[in-house]
Image 1: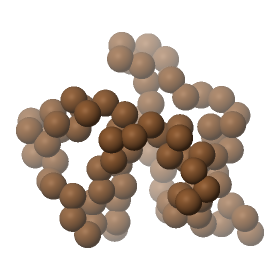
Image 2: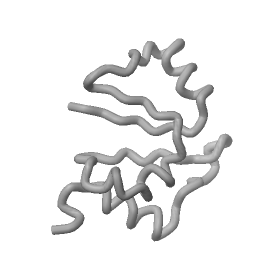
Image 3: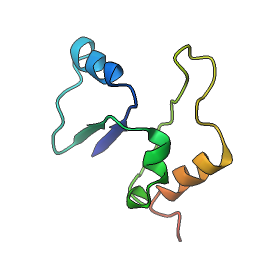
Amino acid sequence: MKTTAVEINPTVISANRHWFHLPDDDERLRVLNEDAGQWVADAANWGMAQVLNVDLYDHEAAAPVLDDEAFYADCVACWPTAGS
């Protein structure tokens, strides 16, 4: 399965590569250092995701940082069947 991970914090990406042996990007894995809200809002990504795993909490894991209707509408647009 092709997988794209979107992470805003570059330290999280490097820690996962170092401590959890997250592999380098290849034909199956892309790790993007981007804002997930902007990624799902970009029409170029609409219809591209079979599955979205949304885990977007603040640095203290106290509350989601993206939790509004517009964000979730963009998430739905990323599914291939959203326009059908």
